[in-house]
Structure formats: C-alpha cells, structure tokens
Length: 311
Image (tube, rainbow, N blue to C red; front, side):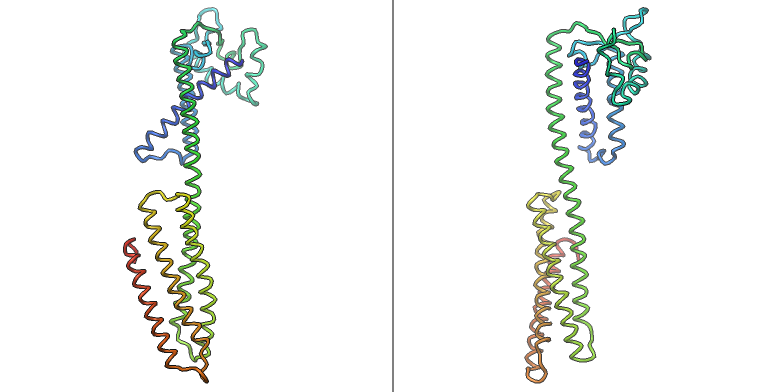
C-alpha cells in the first residue's frame, strides 16, 4: 500500500507540473486561465485521467509506479496485461468508487490476497512488482524530485501573486472610495463658496459649515495619501507607469489640500469679521489675495492632471 501511495504521489507531482505548464504558457501570451476555478479543476482532472490511462494502457505502468517497481497487470488468466477498456474502467468507475467515503476502496488493499483495491476488482486488474532498469529508475526519480521543487516554487509564487493581486484590488477599491469622498467634499466647499447669501449673517453661517466640511476633506485626503504610500511601500503597482501616475496624483492631492486650506482661511476671516470694529476693505483685499492663490493652485493642478490625460 505504501508503495502504491508513493507512486501515486510521484505521478501527481508530475501531473501538477503539466497543469502548471498549461496555465503558464497561455499566460505568456496574456491569456489568463486562473480566473475560472471550475476550468482549473477540470483541466487538472483531465490531465490526471489522461496521463494515468494512456501510460498504463500503453506501458502498463506510470513514472511513479516504475520508480517504485510496480506495474498494472490483468487478474484474468487469459491475458497478462489489461486491455485499454480495463484501464478505462479502472481510471473512471473504479477510481471513483475507491475514493468514496474517504477512500474506503483503498483501505484494505494489504489484507487482500492480490493486493487489489476496489478499482482493481472492478477492472479485473492487479498491481504487481516488476523489474526496473536502475539507470532509468534513478533518472525518473531525479525528474520527479526536480518536478516537486518546481511545483513548490511555482505554487509559492502563485500564492504570492494572488495575495498581491488581492491587496491591489482592495487598494483600488479603498482608493476609489476615498477619492470619491474627497471629490464630493470639495464639491460641497465650492458650492458654499459660490452660494449667494441674503445677508452677512448667512454668509458667516455658510463659512462655519465650510470649515467643518474642510476638516473632513483634510482627513479624506490623508486617507488617499496613506493609500498611495501603502501601495508604494508594498510595491503593489502593476507597472512603472502606474507608479509614476500615482506620484502625480499625490502631488495633485497635495495641491487640493493647499486650496482647501486657503478656502478655510477665507472662511475664518469672514467669521472673524465684526462689522462694528473690523476694516471691510482690508477683508476684501485679503480675500482677493486668497482667491488669487486658489486660482494659481488650480492652474498647477490642471497642469499636472493634463499629464495624466485628465481635464
């Protein structure tokens, strides 16, 4: 039983290598087969079935069985080796039946006189010892070991890429949410700045509301910037171009912060203005300076956004 299990593991290592190749080669041409789990499982099952059936029908053994000194023979006295149909029954109905209830069909192999599993009984086959060429056996053993190393390395790399992709997807989702929040808050600030109040008291009320929104916007911009820093620190960008675009976007958000700071300053000046003691002309002059600064910052942001193809 241990020899058969070891042989099956060796064969599965080779099958896994074949499946990896099936996915890797299309990936070189930009064809992603890994997104469909059902297709992935189907390819693995077909590869295992095809390999086991063809190898045992043609050579009465597999790489794993040969390494362990085993072959598949016929339990019928009329022939030494099984026919293709026997192998087909063994690898379909027999294999399925043996695997039922946690592999019950393999449990009592050692107690059977001919060491038959359910799959062997159904197909009228028997797994028996066979002579092997020591040089071929060593070569195949080395090949299986090399395949195992490749399988482990590729699997580890695959999990790494999957984890990176999941973190990237989460980053994009969070970045979109934070960016949308910044945009909405900036829209509210601009709407308050452009609103036509009926009197100065209402203007001050609007500015009080603006300060609260501006503080929320600062926090939202902080979240956006922290996400960009996270992406850079964890090397989540999919290309150098995307990384450069992110750097420009960070610069734009910093400009937006400065704009909002200027708008907040305007709101503070208006709130601090007292018609009975303050200088109205001085207030207007300060507001014009801040408006000019805001317009200059808007021009800077537009220039940087133009490099990203955004108006």
